[in-house]
Amino acid sequence: QVQLVESGGGLVQPGGSLRLSCAASRSINSIYAVGWYRQAPGKQRELVARITGGSDTNYEDSVLGRFTISRDYAKNTVYLQMNSLKPEDTAVYYCHARVITPLTGANDYWGQGTQVTVSS
Image 1 (tube, rainbow, N blue to C red):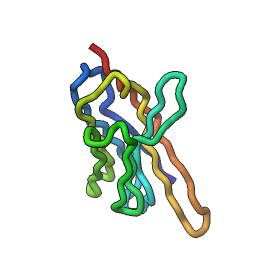
Image 2: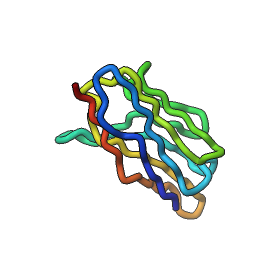
Image 3: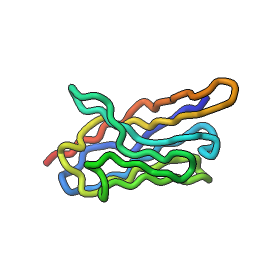
Image 4: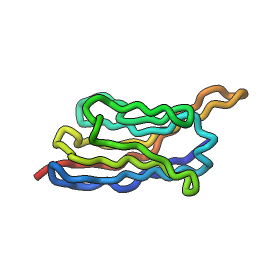
């Protein structure tokens, strides 16, 4: 199992920056995939950025060049640096982890979510 705790959300003006943090309760070395999803009101949850298999990264098209996902193995923490924020980035952002074991297969874990609001 893994617990995920997000922090760093808030209110920011368009063009501003925020950094989200996701602290994991176990070594992120042991986690197959870690990433960030978001859900805006009335919309489905969507992938924002993800690291899979240790080094492969994926980004949602609209955040390419603006958002960067990174990890700190010593702190078991995953970050999402968000620059040039736009009002359409407003959403609840969720940290996600997928753990794969020979015994249980793939298991998905979610954080509680952190609100990001981009508004003037």
